[in-house]
Image 1 (spheres, rainbow, N blue to C red):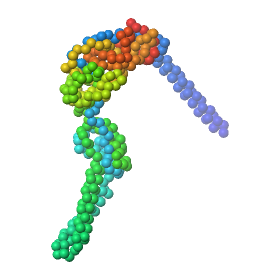
Image 2: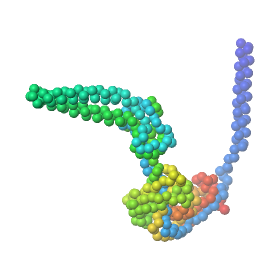
Image 3: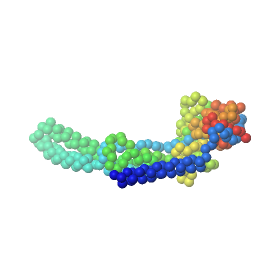
Image 4: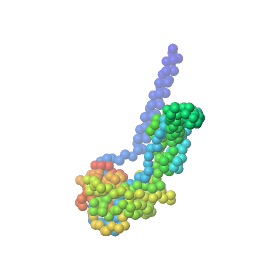
Amino acid sequence: MKRIIIISLFALAVIVLAALKLMSNKEEAATKIFERDPSTAVLVDVTKPSNHTFESSLSFLGTFDANLQNNIASEAGGKLISLNVKEGDFVNKGQVLAKLDDEMILLQIETAKLNINQLKNDFERLSALKKENVVTNSEFEKVDLGLKTAEVQLKQLQKQLKSTSITAPFSGVVSKKMVDLGSMIAPGTPIVELIDISSLKLTVSVPERDILKFKTGQKITAKADIHGSTTFEGEIKVIGVQADAAHNYKVQAIVTNSNEHKIMAGMYGSLTLTNSTSVSALSIPRKALVGSSKSPQVYVVRNGKSVLVNFNAGTSDGEFIEVISGLSISDEVVIKGQVNLQNNSNVKTK
């Protein structure tokens, strides 16, 4: 008993020492972590919105989306016995992506073919007897109907057999795998997500004053922010007929991708219109932009605090963005130091 007590006390001592050591390490690590004092003002550069002339080649901000993106589902039900692709694989149109167990269907097809052969023999035999008026018309028609019904049933089974092979409806990249090998699949169950980015949809917001400059089928050039000045050819496919609250219209172009300078779905880009006239409008430097081009925001300095402000953007020429609404000419917009800011941070301007 005494020995057990000694062992228990020793184990307790080891646990206490380990806990003290962990607390000591935690305190030591905390002293090495720099935490900015939230009351300390962040030094930033600011500028005020000003009138800027956008030349004859106007750009409109937007985002690239995959031209084709779909969840490829199974038409049939059954056990998944083969899954031939993984995430990131490129597949061609018509390529088999997965296979369901088809053993029972194959047996049913074999039975249906034997039945059809028997009915064909009966049909030929009754056809000869009918010419000799040995059988009645109703007997002959019954066999004829049975043969046609069996042939239809065979076609249905062959269609079910084809459905056990899930194929790619278009060429693209497997972006997501939704089932695992051996899963029981119900009709309509998504197997993989397939994305085609050989061409992309670039959707932009166009101010009311410029919307009539766009025509369906019109050729345009596009740029992706990540590829700098590299241009891509495109064509206007859709022009919105309903404006949003800021009187902007959605315009969508189909842009051909490049193997050398590949655009990924979700990247920021711009659509350039070359046959428009110069426009002078209130604008801010593009480097002030925070967030996406779909929901543009900037930090504005007000009473020594940073305020995150939403605004409606219009035309862009790569360096400046037109301000349609949300900002005034007296606002002090942060153009440098945004990375250190949060809403309502203390700021100090240079």
